[in-house]
Image (cartoon, rainbow, N blue to C red; front, top):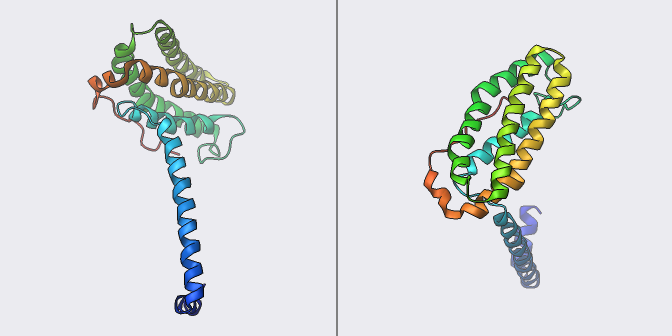
Length: 194
């Protein structure tokens, strides 16, 4: 609509009434939709103590996608194998290891011993941290493209398991006890170069 149409609508009583009624209906529908959407979003909300880890996961998931063979949807995905290797090794040393440290020294000790199933899951996650380290070593040794691909899939499945299963279980079992470590865990990733 141009300004002339706006003036005409606002000066014509019948059109003004129609516009007001329809705008009210549209705003009501829009508000209802937004409320339903926000209700759905709230069910997935993380405990404030775990949010920094989830932020890291989001960034690391992008990196995992970028190092997979034939994945070109990111800047990292279009990089040379050599650049991917340099990037992955740098990120492992500067971001992944500190991230693993937060989980293994702060979050997991708080959760261990509270639930047998959770203890098993945490032990599996710690083993996966070691497997990711081994995958990094294999990348440095050779057959880089295939090993980057393996790392991408390993990292992706690890992150999804933590986000969908382990963190949800920790929140369910610990609840507000997570406040004990509030402020001690922080996001170690910024952009992951992507």
